[in-house]
Structures are given as structure tokens and as C-alpha cells.
Amino acid sequence: MAAVTGDIKDLSLADAGCARIDWALQEMPVVRGIMRRFAERRPLQGLRISACLHITAETANLARTLVAGGAELALCASNPLSTQDDVAAALVSHYGVPTFAIKGESTEVYYQHINAALDHRPRITLDDGADLVSELHKTRTQLLGNMIGGTEETTTGVMRLRAMARDRALKFPIVAVNDAMTKHLFDNRYGTGQSTLDGVIRATNILLAGKTFAVAGYGWCGRGIALRARGHGADVIVTEVEPLRALEAAMDGYRVMPLLEAAAQSDFIITATGDKHVVDSRHYAVMKDGCVLANSGHFNVEINIPALEAMAVAKHRPRPYVEEYELPDGRRIRLLAEGRLVNLAAAEGHPSAVMDMSFANQALAVEYLWTQGRDLAPEVHPVPAEIDGEVARLKLAAMGLAIDDLTTEQQNYLGSWREGT
Ligand SMILES: NC(=O)c1ccc[n+]([C@@H]2O[C@H](COP(=O)([O-])OP(=O)(O)OC[C@H]3O[C@@H](n4cnc5c(N)ncnc54)[C@H](O)[C@@H]3O)[C@@H](O)[C@H]2O)c1
Image (cartoon, rainbow, N blue to C red):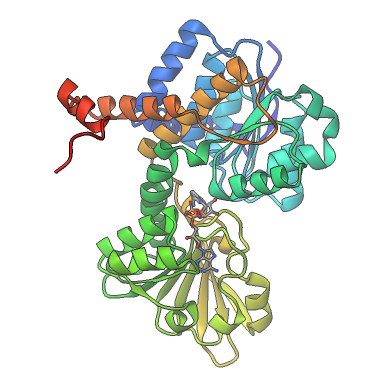
């Protein structure tokens, strides 16, 4: 067998990576079930896939599932700071998956790695943030003719792909895995909630109880972050631009105010908006000394870092993942993980149990595209409701939870309009 190629940090980390991957699999019963079925029936035989995902233990288990189904897979990172180097080594040496990902890679190498994954000549892509699909459309157009479709893992990616479809620039169909209920209700909320707090705590080890903690954006991620920060005993402020979301935050019991007001009183400010320059110079001007800034949204543009660099008179790194900027008046602002996804850069990303559902959707969406997706229009499509429902059913069963069935009388009642007061 030819040696599997890739560009990773250090092959000698592979055994540690395997241990991490096996540990994660124990919390991924739905993916395990799909992996077993795929290994028996090989539904993806003959399929070439290029996947741009965070290279974590959970992603490795998705990769194993796709390979068990008969697919040939090449992997690259969807963020320069989120790669687990031991997992990347294990993927290459133990699981035979060409992997191009090194934690801390430059933007240039990041795009070289995306192109290396595209050299695999995919028929289906898996993306997290739409960098792979956008590169394919911008610089690798000769590959478009081969494409059956792709899947997209995150909110920001789905927004970019919808924008491409609106401009008629999208040339193959995308299944928006992010929009499956069994994905964003759990992964974005409970996964980002727990792992963002984990990243902030690992990076700073600062007590949250009694502190003021602002969350910008009360979407699925923001809700989870606010919930978990409150659980730590913090006084949580939510900032929003959508009235409905702001109202929901207020009725969930959080203080709601503009970020400028929140910035003056917060010990922590965490962004999860998918938006740009949410935290900017006017906020730095009023922040408390020692304020900790972190981002859990997809790209590192939510906090305006160039503006912070321009305002600062000095900068140093007191701990890994912490950059301390000193302002002319002596106040210090602490930026975590270079403004990149703090949960993946400073911690280990989402716990495996939520990725179990996200990646079950991914595996089943790939099977759907390969077996039934050839006539789909080049637009963004939902995950079929049967797949979403099946993932919920399998997860409940794996958790040992049973629910009630509707009686015939109830089914008739719920389906009729005749019975009233
Ligand atoms: N860290 C992770 O592992 C992880 C996981 C899932 C999603 N994400 C990313 O997190 C981001 C948010 O995802 P989501 O699913 O919560 O999206 P969402 O659309 O449900 O929520 C985003 C919220 O931010 C608000 N918002 C936009 N601009 C704002 C501003 N300037 N100030 C305050 N609020 C603003 C919007 O009104 C919306 O309510 C996306 O970039 C997504 O890709 C990250």
C-alpha cells in the first residue's frame, strides 16, 4: 500500500491521537451505529470526498465513518488554530486519511492545505465556514464539473453559501447541516456554551462567580454561552441587534443593553454573532482594566484586533492563549486565542456527545447526496426531515430515554378541527 500523504506536525503524536479519538467515540453512539451500518453495506463505495473541518477527535470519528462506508477522503483544517496535532497524526498513520492541518499554521499554509485537499478531486465536499467551497469556486473551477454537492456545518458558512446562491455564483447543491434541528439546537447551544466557558477558563483560570460577563449575540451559540456563564455565578449581560432576540434574552432573565454600556462594566466580553467588528475602538476606550475579550463566532473579525493593536502602547503574552494589550492610560485588555474560536483554540471544541448528532447528520447527508442528490438544484437545501428525525430518535434511544406514543384518539384529535370548546 502506498504511504498516506498529508502535511501534519508530527507523526510520533499518533498514539496519543488514537487514544483521544477512541475516548471521543465512547460518547458518540449514533455515529457508532452509522459506522457499523456503513461498514456492512458500503453505501459510499467509489465516492471521493474533500472535507474542510476542525481537525478534532470527533471529526476523526466522522472520517472513520465515511471511510467505513467506502469513501476515499482527504481532510484539511477549517481554522488555522483549531487542529489537534495528535489527531491529525493518527488520521494519517492509523486511519489512512490524507490530512493537511497543523495547529498555528499561517493563512498562506491554511489555503495551501485547502488546495491540497481539493487536489483529491472531490465529488462531494464537507465544509465548516465555506472556505473550501469558496476556494473551489474562485480558483479551482475545473473541478466544478465533477461535483455532486456539498454539506455545510456552521451558521456563518450557510450565510455565505446563501449569498453565493443569491448571486447565482453557487454551482452545486449544498445541504445545510447547521440548520438541522438536531445540529444547531444542541451543538451551537450546549456545545458552544460548555466549550466556550471551558476555553475561557483554561486560558485565564479567572473565577467567573461574581464577575460581569457580557455576551454579544443571543443566537444559538450566545444562548448557550449566557446560560453556562450564569451557571458559574456570573452577572450576565446580553447585547443584540435583533429586537426579538433581545426580548428573549430579557425574559430569560439577563440584563440587555448596548455593548458600549456593557463594555464599561464587564470583566469578560464574548462575541458569538457571525458579524464583523462587533467589539471596536469605542468599546476599548471605555473598558475596565483587565477586561477579557474572546470570540466564539466563526471568523476572527468579530473583535477588531487591528484597531486594538493600533491603540495599544505595549503588548505581551502572560499565559498561553492570552495577549495582554496595554493602553496609553495604563488599562490592560486581554485578548484570548488571537480572537479565533476560543472553544477550539484554547480548549478542545464541542464535547463529543453533541458532535455525535452534528456528525450523524453529516454522514447521513453525504449518503443522501451520493444516493439521491444528483438532481438537486445548485442552492442551499435543508437536511431532509427524515434524517433530522432519525438522528433525534437514535440519540434518545442511545441515552436510554423512552417517550410516549400518541393514541389513535389523540392522533385523530390533533388532526381534526371539529372538536372545540
Ligand atoms: N464556536 C463554535 O464552535 C461555533 C459553533 C457553532 C457556530 N459557531 C459560529 O458562531 C456564530 C453564531 O452562530 P449562531 O448559530 O449562534 O448564529 P445565530 O444567527 O443564531 O445568532 C447570531 C446572533 O448575533 C446577533 N448579532 C449580529 N450582529 C450583532 C452585533 N453587532 N451585536 C450583537 N448581536 C449581533 C444576531 O442578531 C443573532 O441573534 C457563527 O459565526 C457560527 O458560524 C461557532
